[in-house]
Length: 520
Image (cartoon, rainbow, N blue to C red; front, side):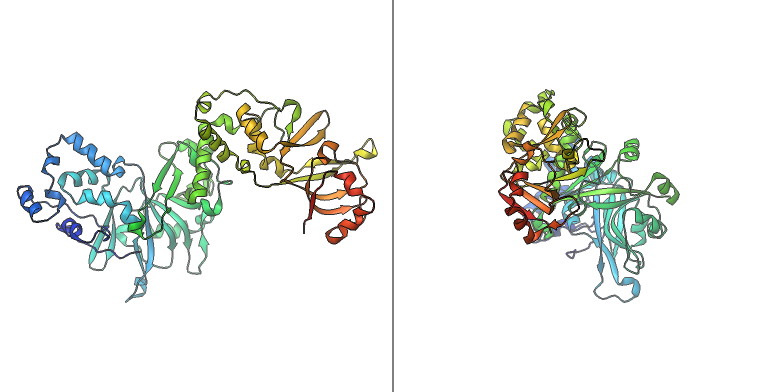
């Protein structure tokens, strides 16, 4: 945290002093009272003298119609929309504590200066601009800074206070700060033993947290996408029924490098409570929340380019639900990860808006939806199942897709069964087919035989269970072990080649094999 020069709320000259300082000097985080005295008459004299005090230097602006002035202020300060914000604070070790309670100090996160820059300018320009800001943000977060009192303006009903860590055994949250917080987002709560509490475990420390923040109504447990990913969270954060707040600080003011933007998503519990209760993943049950006397929800945080790409994909799928579900319930797609060849054709679904997009944009969207289109080599796993009632010796075993293959190829299969363009993109990237005989149906797995690797945990040489149209396509094979007959000696590592070379059993199984690897 960079040190900030703290002013009294009644410091009428703070803006003038700030404007004369070095351009690299960071704006103060204080809510400076606007100058109350009428200095309009001396504006020209002050400008000639080089005084850039904004509160008296724009007489033409005050001559504009009020509604136009208000619109200009809104353009200058987007926070005036009243949308919920996320305000970050951190606990910092004191340099020279005189008492045990002073070892830690609550201070503003370094991004907050950039985040509140336009709002603070309004608070310290003149009466009208200040009254607009105070009307939107009527509440104050007070930080005690020695002999001075620092204030951050906010709206306690909607704004969320963010603390990466909250220590339970240290009294460092000022009373005038603690009593104002109604919505808190937390990375983890830590007790005196150093144990972290987050997610469902926050239920265990609710009494202690409410002891620090007595008026707390909602507690949000941070879900960092860069660590936890999106798979278990679900797609609720990409809907229109949640709050979203983008934080993109200026690295020249914060000291951070470029590309440090963050986006926070959390359920809109006031406008869409039913959606939150039924669709949003929760750290604990609604009954547990009621018993604890505190609502506990997840807050997703997106950072880094990969996370934002994941969000863009979720958002696109939300806006195009038919594409997200393409083929999942149709005959074209089987639950085991294969496509039924007899019905492997475009579904003729109607997406006129999507088709009207430029071709390069459509292709880019498909690439976001299906990362496999990058063409990077994949591992496709198959398994061998034993038939309990075979009618012929050759039916003793059946080659099947591994259960994970259905999830692995879901987006690819959706593209195959959406429309001609999406199918042609897939076929161009994956021109080859692995055919599995499924009774009367001919199941197909699309792949690229030159690069993709077929993985078999076990291979039995005495049973003809690999379909010919499968065996001839495999060029790259990963194998766990090979058995000459079921239940006999396993061959692996350096024992593999001698077991096949003499009898040429390898070529009988996989005739087109070019490379093989041993899984250890």
